[in-house]
Image (cartoon, rainbow, N blue to C red; front, side, top):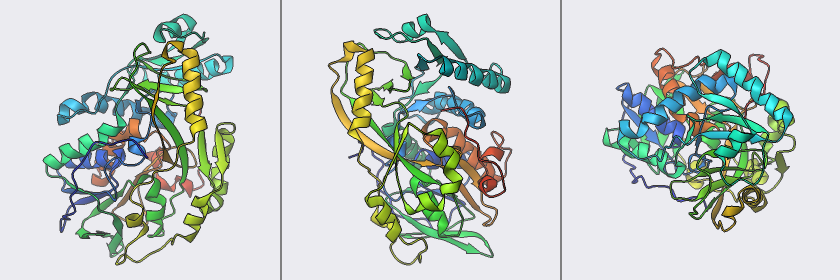
Length: 445
C-alpha cells in the first residue's frame, strides 16, 4: 500500500456553477486552485480518490533548482520562492525545510556535465540562485560520516524538501476554509462544450457549469483528454521508494548519485531510492507513441527497465471514448497503487548504508511505488488547448511536479485568466508535439 496521507474530509456536494473546475487533487491541481482563488475566481476541484493520493504523496519530496532542465529552470526558481513562504501564507504545515541538495559523483564526465549545466544556469539566472560546484573536501563536510570519497559535486544550499504526505492535503484544507470547493471522492467523467468551447464538467455527483477547465489528472490525463479527441502524448513510469524508521546520526542535506538518493524526513527517518532507476510497463500506448519517445528511450538506457504484465491487457480492454451518463473507469480505479520493486529500493538502501555505515541499523518502515506521468521530452504540458477554447492541461511533469508544483499552478492560473505569465510558457505548450518541433532531452535530471 501507498504511504499514509493526511486527511481531507470528503465532500460530494457539487456546486451548480463556478468559474473554473480543476480536475485532479495532486500538487498541480491544488496549486492551480490556490492561484486561481488568489485571483478572485470561483473554483471547484474534483478528485476521484483522495487529495494527494497518487504520485504527489509518493515522490522523494525534493524541492530543487539543482540540475533542472533549462526549460524548467525559471519555473523551479519561482516555485522555490513560493515553497519558502507557503506555510506562513496559508497557516499550514507542509514540512518544508531548506536543507540543501547535493549531487555528488566519482566520475570526471559527470563533473564536466555539472560545470556545463552551471554555466548555462548562470547565463540564464545570474545571481538568482546559489548553486555551486563543490570539491571532495566540501562534499565530505556536507556528508558527515561518509566512508566513501567523492571527487566533487553540485550543491545548492537554498534547495529544500517538504513532506509529500502532508503538502497537498494541507493546501487543500486551507483552500476549503477560504471557500474553494474541494470535492472528494468526486470523479470527473468528462467535459461538455457549447459552441465549441467548454461549458460544463460532468461528475459522478452532478454537472458543474463553468467557463474553463484545468485537467491536472497526472497519470490519468491522457485517457481523460482522449475522450475529447485531444491527443496528449504521455506514458507512465513506475518509481519505487522506501522510508526508514527514525534513526540518529545521518546527514541532514538531501543528496543523490547514480546508486542512491535520500532525504531526511520530518519524522527522523529517511526516504531512500535507488538513484534514478525506474520501470515502465509496456501498454498499447507504448506502441501508439513509440516514435515520439525514441529520444527519451535513448537517454534512459541503463536506468529504465521495461516489462509487460497485466497492465497491458487492462488498458487494451479499456474504452478510449465513453458516454458521460454512465460510470467510468475513474470511478472504478480511485487510486493507482502499483507494487514497488524491492530490488530497486532495497538496493538503494544497501548503497546508502555502505556510504554511511553508522546507519546500518536503519530499519525499513515501508516500501511503495507510484506512477510518474512522462512526456516525450520529460517537460510538462502547461497549456491551453487550441481546439477546445476554455480547456487547459497541466500534466506530464515527469517526476518533477512536486518541486515545481506551486509555480506551475500559478503559471496555469495566469494562462486561464490571460494575465501576464509568471514565466514564458512557450516550452510547455501542448502543440510542440504536433507542430514539427524537434523533441530534445535536456542534460538535466
